[in-house]
Image (cartoon, rainbow, N blue to C red; front, side):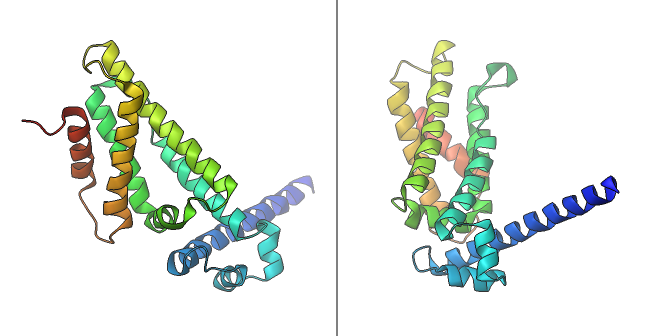
Length: 205
C-alpha cells in the first residue's frame, strides 16, 4: 500500500514538473514574439493552454516566471565557467573553451538572450540582482585567470581587474552582434578564438 501511494506521489510530482516546464517553454516563445513588457499573463495562459488559476499555482506572475527562465540560463552558463588549472593544459586553450561554451549556450537560448539584452535591464530589482551577480562571477573568473597567468609568467604585468572589465565588455558586444542582432549561425569556435586573440595579443603586428 505504501509503495502504491509513493508511486502516485511520484507521478503527481512528475506531472507538476512537466506542466511547469510546459508553461515556461510556451511563455518563452510568447516573450520572444511580443516582448516582455507587451506580454500579459492572459497571453501566457492562452499560449500554455491552462487556466489562469493553474498558472498561479506555479508562478506569482509574469515577472516570477521570467526570473525562473533567467535563473535557468545563468545556471547553465555557470556550469560552463571552469576555473583555469594549468595542470589541465594551457591557459589560452582553457579560456577559449570557456568562451566557446558560453557562446554556444547563448546561441542555444537565443530567444531568452535577446530578451535579456533588449528588455531585462531595469526590469525589476530581482532581475537586476541576478544579472549583476552573473556579471560579477564572469568578471572574477577572467581576473583570476589573468592572475594565474601572471603568477607563472605567461601574462605580462597589468591590472587584472581592469583587463577583466575590458574582456567581459568585449564579449558582451560580441554576443550583441552575433547572437542578439541576427538569426544567422556563425562559427562559434572561430569567434571565440578571435575574441581571445584580440584580448591576449591586441592589434599591433
